[in-house]
Image 1 (cartoon, rainbow, N blue to C red):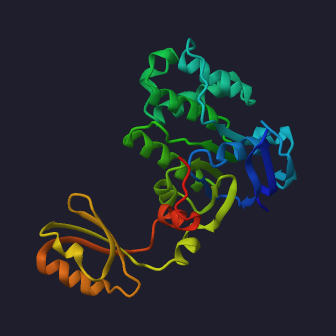
Image 2: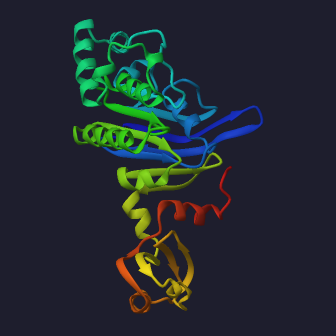
Image 3: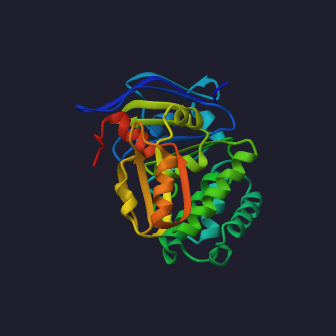
Length: 300
């Protein structure tokens, strides 16, 4: 049974339709990506899933039942807009969040300390929130969403504003939670993150579903006509007759072949003129697939 299911869900704010007839489901144990540009309806969809707002039409089920607030005890939610008590010490704040989610004070403290060590903020656990960087505060809110060990984890832009080291730490933590059998939904406009992490996606644009399904299946529908080359030396091979489009980023070239373009001919041309460190024929990225699907009309 799906952990989350949306069936023809619509939500409008005055004369703007934020979500239009949106349908998808999330199976147990999946890492699911809800993705699209800023303003596409991701946050509106999440808010309806957890009862912050109600859909104008359509149906939402959590854990195979129509939405009930009692189901939220099984959900961990990290909102896009962070909210912490700035004057409160980190440990006190995490204990408070844990007790709100049904833990005893003792258990909440035990879990808070363990999580602080795991996410490398143990040295700051007795500091006030306002004394910490934005990245550190984001980790605290991340812990508060997970401290009660929810079955369903919903995270709205969880990696926004994090440096690469901390983003990787949170990504690894989510993968670990998935390995434990938890279901994870996160929204993002960063499609490269989804390709690395997610089993399935729903890709929305201007409130409408434009692609959904397993990432591997979606990408397999598209021809392998992209080539990534890392090289040094003469870049004139980028003018090859095999190439429809090429971008060179200081020795890393991303190429789209012509309809009848031959990757092996291109490799021979490139090797004759430059030193090649990597030559890889790849499927289009999710971002390229998205742009193809919506005709390049991406929200600002």
